[in-house]
Length: 334
Image 1 (cartoon, rainbow, N blue to C red):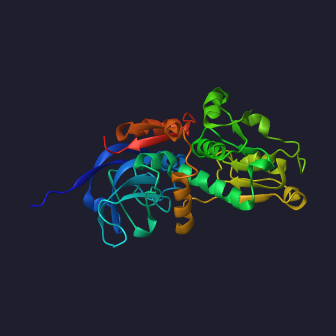
Image 2: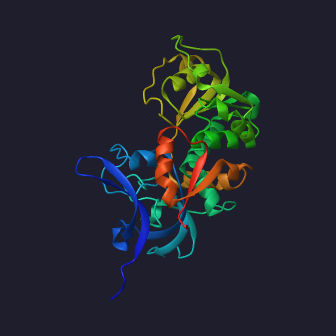
Image 3: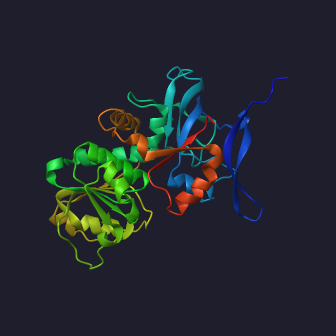
C-alpha cells in the first residue's frame, strides 16, 4: 500500500460556536486544491490580509477550514504544463492564493499555472519573500508614479504608514532611486529605523491629517504612496503639488474618502489605484524584474526577520495589534 503523503500547514477552522481557531496540522496530499503546478514552499511572508483570513474575516476568506498565506516562494515539485518544470524556482503571490485558495502557510501549494512567476534574476527565494505582496504593491506604486512623470527634482515624496510592509519597502525603494522621502508614522519611536531605510524626514501621522474642510492645502508633495486611507488620504490629496500623483493602496484607517474635486481640476492631481492581487502578468513580471535589479534596496535583508511556521500564530496577533514593523518571513523548511 502506498503511504499517504502529508505536509504541515497553518489550518484555520471554525468551531460549532462560530469562533475561529488556528493550529499547525498535518494535511493530506489530497487536500491540495486544483491546479497544474505543485510548489514546495521554502518561504512565505506575513501580511495584514493573512491575519484577517486567520481570524475568520469573511470579506477575505469565504470558506473554512482554510490555509492562509497570500505569498509563496519555492521550487516546482510537480507540473502538468511544459512552461514549468520540476526544480524551477518560482514565486506565487496574489490572485486567490491564501484568500479563497489554500495558501502559502504550508509546505506545499497547488496553484493554476497562470499564477506562477519565475524567480527574478538578482533575488533569492528568501529575498523574494522579504518583498512578497507588500514589495510587489510598493513596486507597483512606484511604477505608477514614475509612469505618471514623477522625478526626483519635482520635490519630496511622502510615504504614509511607513513602518508597515508596503510603507517601509516604498521608503527603501524610493530612497534607493534618489528621491527625497518623507515618512509618516504613528510609531514615533521608529524614527531611526526609517532613517536607516533612507527617509529624509519623519512626520507624526496625526500632524498629517487636516480637518479644516478646505478644498486645497499648501502644496507639499510631488508624489505620495498612501497606505492607510481615510482622513490621511483626503489630506494628502489636498497637499499634492501641481500635476502630482497619489498612489493609493490601503484602507487600514478607513475605506471612505471624503474630498472635493478641487485638487483634481485646479492642480491636476492624479489618484492612482493600486491592486497587486490581480495585476496583469506582463506588468507583474516587469515589476518583479525591477525589484530584483535596479529597484532592489541595499538594506533589504534588514527589513525582514525570519520565523518558523510554529511561531506564526503569535505574529498574526502582533500584526493585528499594530506591533510589527517591516516584514516577517515564514521559513517552511524548519
